[in-house]
Length: 311
Image (cartoon, rainbow, N blue to C red; front, side):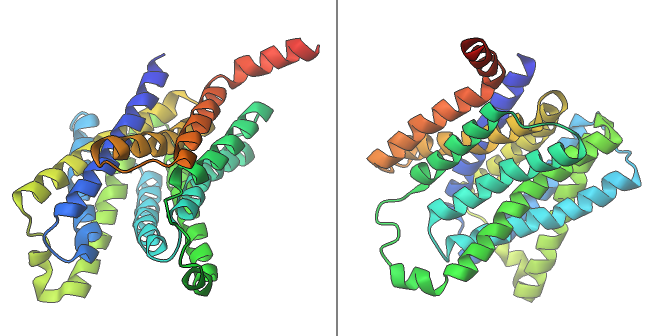
């Protein structure tokens, strides 16, 4: 019950993160191309502080946690870069499918290969149902009308989407691997190293791109600053809640609910708060995803029922 509540909290926090990020982006007064690196710098600092609080104001970790954290910082930076590039190159529904596929499948495969955590048939079917629903939920009206333009960039787009999925998956893998190899005592330190590393990388990017105008990129309006700080705070709470969830639950279950649940709630929240119209396909996708998530959460009971039915 405790783990289920933590997973639910993770989904809620990441959904709020996506909503606040959109509001921050809409109100950011500078070059829109700078919203991500500016956010990464501020978020990295806030996540580090929050993780320090979660660790009980102590910070002590081994070289392996530092190494995995630094690698994950580059992966996190790559994820941000890939999703921006993919968004500008091709259909949103396809990039979200690749991202979610990587976020669920890559950690599950690593757990199966190296930590002997097997897939069940019901889990596999549930994941396939969720993948199908992702396309339906993410499909925007009039998406794909510029077919000729999409054809020109199709190969590049698919490569970027593949890298996006790998980055999303590997980010989760390293969080899990760190806990498996070093224990949970350094989980907050792992988060802090990852996000402060991503902040440093993003700051270097800003300095290289903007030079003397770097400080101007951080100029905010009252609204953009409020949403920036809210996004960063929610992100900090979300990632720390996620690593707590990984302590007491199957990796496949956690990442399936995290990735799919956030997409589902974000689609509903966008319709409620931003008045985005959900098409009939989007609504059917939401229903199908809900069924898939229910099956995923109850896979053990479903398997017992099926065994009794066909015994």
